[in-house]
Length: 411
Image 1 (tube, rainbow, N blue to C red):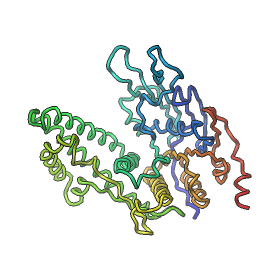
Image 2: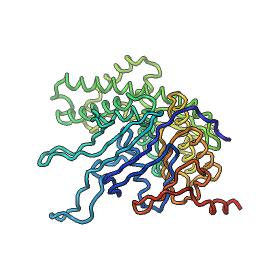
Image 3: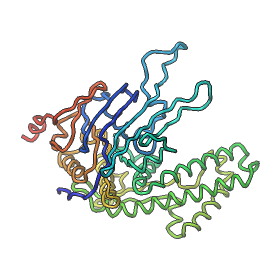
Image 4: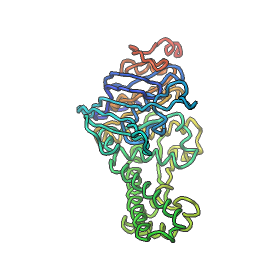
């Protein structure tokens, strides 16, 4: 099935500049708004480019790496015999959003010498300092799939929560701040309980204030997830060509409360549960109730089977189906298609699904960044994409991939 075009603008990186980022000492890449195909051997630096683009959106990037692990490291050791520390890094980009151009810069600002403050991440928009990285969400939304995410449905709930929350960010800019506030209050409460013998020695007003913040933020986070999943299910069940339709559900304590209670009543229930669990949470060293325990449940609609029971190939196809449905929903509701970052996306797809994926991306107008070791897998994109060969952190533009291996495979 050939996807019907979606009338939407897009978000496109038209210039990317890296300084001491991962394996790149210095790099400048100029592009148009078409999808970008990065090919080359393993370890050449392809995924590092996707990670750099992911830092143009809020969050810790597609690898969730520590800031200190991202900067390029010089070979050798320092005078004390330790490996040399990572160099502060920077990512700068020119981004077009619905025809409007914005200059985005982010990177690590070194802490003052002699102090105890850690390095911090800074963000600049059009040359002006931004108060926090959440401002990036006003300009860039990015969705990514990496090989590590192929196990999303078979491993723990934390990665599935992060996955669904990142999708929510694209529709609810306040969701990221709300989630950050919830997690900050939760950490402060855990520390207070630990340091005050289960809260018995703590200022009750302080502990109550933290639980009030957790209740209000937790209900807001859960409500945003529920509202998003309800809209996503409509898009998911339509399916995308040969990709299976998915059915999504949020399984969580607060989400369950919201199914029968107004938000204010649910907040009261959460406050009561947190207060009642103080001793238990002190012993556990963590909060045992709340929005941080929710899980994303996915089912294969046609087979009526839980995603975790599907084959590895079916799970990957379900993930791609969800991302494509999200992309189309954003294009329809917001009028702007997000940036897609697909690491090694084509290698384990059959020919029909590869072509369907490429057609869907191009029909949406999204700028997708895709990596792979085999250039021939991307031949169906023809001149609808830009092609770049990556080798030892060096980039070479290609007019288009070599079509002969692809053609020979069809004979």
